[in-house]
Length: 447
Ligand SMILES: Cc1cc2nc3c(=O)[nH]c(=O)nc-3n(C[C@H](O)[C@H](O)[C@H](O)COP(=O)(O)OP(=O)(O)OC[C@H]3O[C@@H](n4cnc5c(N)ncnc54)[C@H](O)[C@@H]3O)c2cc1C
Image (tube, rainbow, N blue to C red; front, side, top):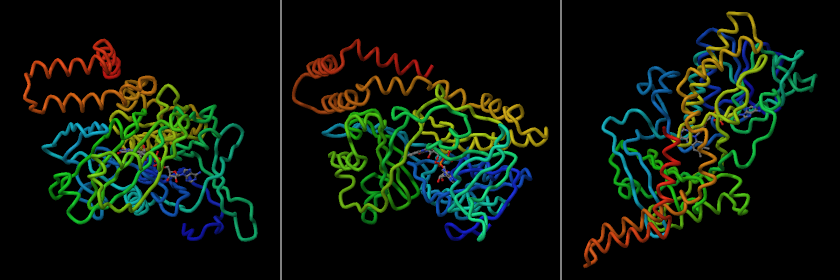
């Protein structure tokens, strides 16, 4: 399907399955569907798959192997560096406290850049037999009675017939990402997303002079860092920052709940600039050149506000469904697994010759059997806890810095006095009772 120019006629097509969106969810559903023998078309509005996409980020070997079994022994796979060191940096105005875990066998995750990663997956999928139409936006769904039976796109049907082209399909998979417009049109959710249900993340790709990234972060060749940043980096607002090392560049970004940014009338680039002015980051990025800048939403509505995952002739996967686990930084892998489960459910529907909810419910059944469902249930109260406990982002990173600063310095006075001072700081900043309550709240999420 060579559609080089925007607005070029589409023609009339009939497919077994049409997928809307060429991110990891849509592409993995596509790969699995063509492997199962279904005639499948994926429609992506960007110039190429990945052109409009942005993430931190880390990709996980376990999920990649499900769609590219030969990984990592595969030509041109765009993994940047294996993640050999992972952890948290608690950033205060004056400095940083680092918790770093060095991995013995670092083969389970890699840093990556989405434009390259999605483009690789799309080439891989095309070789498997997936039809991909890029530079094409799905405008709406086609309905027959109460069943979705295709999509309407922003291309004319032919040179003579300028009406938007329609493509028929037995099943439509909505892999449209966080802006779930078609998911709403499909009636799978009855309201638009609230600002308190999404995090706005801004990200830069930065390049330091040759050898400086490795020197400043103490990295050897083929070793990579994946760090969550907490505290002043988000101005003490609910959210986190991130720092990942690519082959020759750094991915740095900050994500904050959108409602908080709106309340304070903060612009994305302001947050990033303020964060980069903090002493630790200022030194780290000194002399760096910004190669890319972008912003993207992360769905954090959680399982309590999930859309219905299936309807007559339609399924929703990945971010459009809200499949993100912010506590464990998982998103791409959940998108991939949901694509796999959708393809299984579609196979089941074809076997039954039934494309209504009755057969497509199989997708929800598979989802409920998966670890993802258990994890999403586990973190069901996370958003509420994060939004209503600002001390987690304001008080603790600062407290940790002050405690470490006192503990790790010889000040020519008795250590008992130093410990007394530490306890006094804890009492003043949060109180011992507050401390216990916060740990219990966080603990409740994990067990
Ligand atoms: C800043 C940031 C950091 C992150 N870090 C990580 C990380 O480190 N690790 C991790 O695993 N996850 C991370 N995530 C989450 C991860 O990126 C997402 O969960 C994942 O990409 C979701 O995949 P998806 O295919 O569902 O959606 P997307 O990747 O958003 O893809 C949706 C696609 O649909 C297309 N589309 C939308 N509407 C239409 C339409 N009407 N017609 C045609 N095409 C359309 C879009 O152009 C896009 O290509 C991060 C996210 C962000 C924003």
